[in-house]
Each structure stands twice: as structure tokens, then as C-alpha cells.
Length: 396
Ligand code: PLP
Image (tube, rainbow, N blue to C red):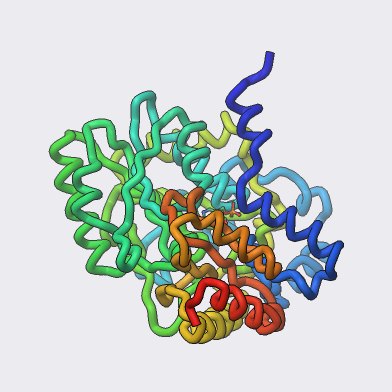
């Protein structure tokens, strides 16, 4: 009567959402200030003032039927050109609006891209730990997600394991740098080695393997860390971008897909992106947001707050004996669970009203994820609870 698979997907909500809902209930019981919710990657830093200024100005000056009307299916031309110009000035690339397709955020960008490139029996490689929705999006496109584990010692890509995982059915791989949940940035040396493997394997297979770069966290890096722009290293790269995190606009649903001219059969791939957008009902991203992006592209929220939060937690965890690597980007810490069963550790943490996410759904058991895109005051208030938790485990 109904699609069983879809029912199952809807009936079992994500672990992260479950913890977030528990947090809401708990806050009603003990007061919001006494619950330390590290579950959700919802930016805690507001969008820059220029975003609201742009919205006001657009409302005051634009014809409302144009402002709120459909743009063309691929997106507003001037918005796409503004994004291309911005990327060209930052990365020395040569994109035009014809390389861009506007979407409702990275989730839509990924779903459209997978749908556009995947055929039956195709495999798409993802690196664990990964954003759990990849498996949902890849399966929805009719392909099979293939997991390759990152190295346990530093959560970087295991190139030997990656090479072994490539088969004649490999259609694409997904890179997410900076990474959710580990915060790891893939450095240039690794990018070069990975692309060399992909070029060699594409030749062996006799067709390109696509590199899908999922980069909602591109601008969220700390210190002088560089995130290599992948189209410069590998021709068959498709970029899935979102303004959700860089401009703190996750609820406004705006992002894009970038298909460079260098992609093999560019015209066909771009048309397939348009077809997938159409078949999934994702044509014409929100118009108001497209016009805002036309004005605000290249700006970011004040990400220095995230760096401050990260350092506050890292300092405390070092004192308390928790094991966690220093992440270069995004707004997540991926901490080793002091017991093998991360879910059990999260249950114990709950006793102290610390809401952490066990790593099993990220494909990398034995860790917990903390989203530190929260108020600095909440972090400070939560430290005694972390200390008590560390004491319970005999870490201090
Ligand atoms: N990809 C990664 C790695 C994410 O962490 C997220 C959201 O948290 C998305 C994609 C989806 O982003 P959006 O909200 O723009 O759809």
C-alpha cells in the first residue's frame, strides 16, 4: 500500500534528532540552563548583519512578484554569476554561471548529484566517520554506499584501504572536508595522492570515477589551515555546497552544485543534474535567498567564536583525561569513548545532563560527537559535569 522502505526511514528518526528531542523534554523538566546539549549542528553564531540588511532592502525595493516568484529552474543568472566570480577570485578558477545549479542546501545538492550520476549496481565510496545521511541519499539514488574506514590514529583517509575498495562498479567517491563528525581537513598531500589513485583507476575501468566534494564547512577552519579546492586537482569533481553553516542559514535552505567545464561530458552531466533536480522536485531554489546570496556571497558569520569554543573544550578535556584530537575545522569534536560501547557512555553522560551523540551512526563505533556550535556560556556551565563524568570513569 505504501513504500515500506520510506515508512521505515520515517518511522526511525535519526539518533541525533532523538537526542535533540530528549534534550527539549529534559530542558522543560530541569530548566534550559541545566541541560548541556551538544547534539545538533545548528550554527550558534548569527548570520552577518548584511544578510538581514539585504533581506530588508530586497523587500523595500524589489517588485514582490519578482522577489517571491520562480527563478529559472537552474537558479537566478546574476546569483550564479556572483558565486562564480567569488570562487574565481578566491581559488583562481574560471567558472561562469553555466557551471552552477542553485539548490536548497547541501542535502539537495547531494541527492541531485547522486541521482544524476548513479545507475543500478553503481557503488559510491564514503569515508567513515561520515555524515549519516549519505547512506540514505546514495540508496535513494539506487546506488550502494561502500564504506572505507579512516585511520584510527588520526581519522585521516587510509589511501591503501581506499584503493582496495575501488571496483569496476565504483561511480563516485565523496569527500567531506572539513569533516562532520571529525573536523578533519584533508590536506593537499592527501588530495594529490587520492586524485592520483582515482586517475589511475578511472583509466583501468575505462570511464571516470567522480569526486563529489561535499563542502558545507569549507569556510569553517581555524588558524592558517587551507582547504584545497578540489576541482583544481581532479577534473571530474562535482562540488556540493551549502550556505547553511558559512552564513548560518540552515533553515533558509540555500546552496548549489558546481560542475566545472573540465568534467568529462560536461554538457551531459550538467543536463543530468537538471534532470535529477526536476525528477526530485528540486527546481528553483528559494528566490529570496538566491537574491540574498547574490549580495552576500563571500561573507561569513563570525567563526572565531567556534574556534574559542573548540579550544575551551580541548583544554578542559586534556585536564579531565578524555582523548580527542584537535580538529582543524567544522564545529565538531570527535572524542574517544572511555568505554567501548559509546551508546553506554552517552547514557552515563545523560545523568549529568550532557547530551552527546554516539558515533555508531557515523560508521565509526567507539567515539562520541560533540557539536560545539553552542553558546560559550553553556560550555562553561557544562565543564563541572564533564569533570564529574571523567571522575566516574577514573580518568582523573
Ligand atoms: N553534508 C554534511 C557533511 C552536513 O554536515 C550537512 C548538515 O549538517 C549536510 C551535508 C546538509 O546540509 P544542508 O543543511 O545545507 O542541507
